[in-house]
Length: 376
Image (cartoon, rainbow, N blue to C red; front, side, top):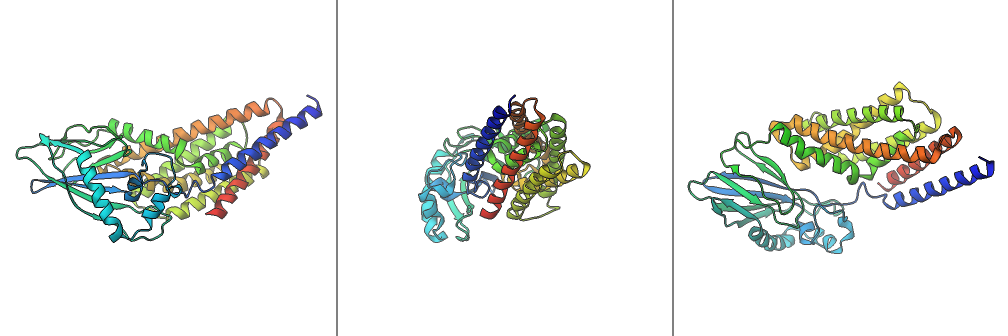
């Protein structure tokens, strides 16, 4: 290959990386932008009355936003208006919405149950840039002799976590919009099996790793940019996945408690350090693997907040951690393989192009991470 051809190729690579940097920078607030929080339904029976406590982002649902969608809350003018209302102003709107929800939410315990609005707890306005999570209470009398119930979550409201309370071996499930739960014994005993727990939480971890956070993808790019060879990439993904599992366990168990905002910023700084490392030390060292493991721990602690929001079955905590962590690790591995393949195709057999591509990618990653940190 002639020098002129090589120069042209390098120029194209630089142009593509600059374009990539500009595109990712336009999503610089992805790590902090508001997205609808998951909806959780806790239910229990007391004195022949079924109580449903629904933990939800009331403003998002009132604004017509799909909690499972990718639209950012800050982009909705209706949501921003609702988010600034004090609780006394928002409560009448939530009460009106609860009437519609009670009619759409189908609950059967031998016969269909008639749900009634019992009240709502709405936090103070606080920081309007963060979601406000309210708790809506519905209730219905349970027919005499009823031993189980079945619930259908309305379409258009996104996924739902169901959690049974105040019984032994309580049911915990995950329903998509429009889905119906299995028959749930009111006296308990319907806890998820190990296999069912894994099947519920593995897709959640996989989905979040692939689509939930651009910061994770940028972290993977920083790891791969050390060298576009399979062994160093596989080693780093293995160590970061191990750190994520440990961080998840520590975070969910409450053994370590760190503010999520601080964790996100710490991971961003770590990405900058990894990218600069790529420019100085081009080989995989033990110290690099130790650092990658530590960064994985920070990511795991941050992800523990996401897992807690989903609702972890107390009787199957290890299985839920394993399923969610394995899903995240699988998603990161898929991203790493895609980035690796892209790098191999661009660099070909030329070690010179390989080195230049690693340097340009690392510089771009560092620039994006610094940009995100400054915005944060």
